[in-house]
Image 1: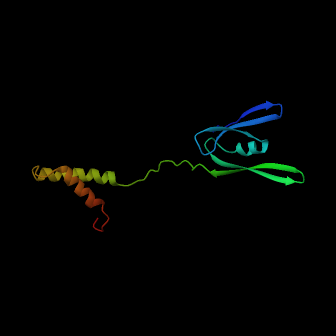
Image 2 (image 1 turned 180 degrees about the horizontal axis):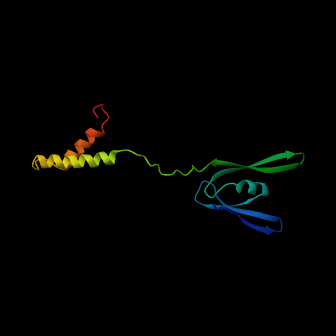
Image 3 (image 1 turned 120 degrees about the vertical axis):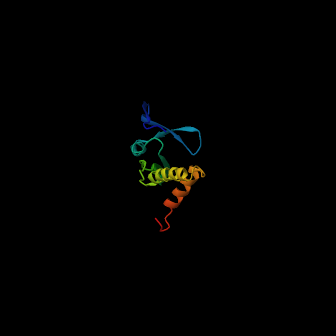
Length: 129
């Protein structure tokens, strides 16, 4: 949840305190080991990851270690695409032509309806353009 952990010193040595969530709204504290801290440093705030605690018995001793796996990388930020089309110019020309048609007909027809009709006919890819 934070980009950097709270780093401190206790009687057991240096600690790395992270605020994490476990699928719910509650914030939990996680004291990371040094190797987990090194892996978490590569992640950013908001990145999702899974920490798996593995235990292995070697003789009478149980050895624990942690694995950190990013589960979802942030999508790269996409810049707004500038899609170039000629619809603006086409609509503008259709409106101009509609006004001319309306004036020729002495105001008998609505210029807006004429403009929309011209725009649809001109923008339609039916082989007649």
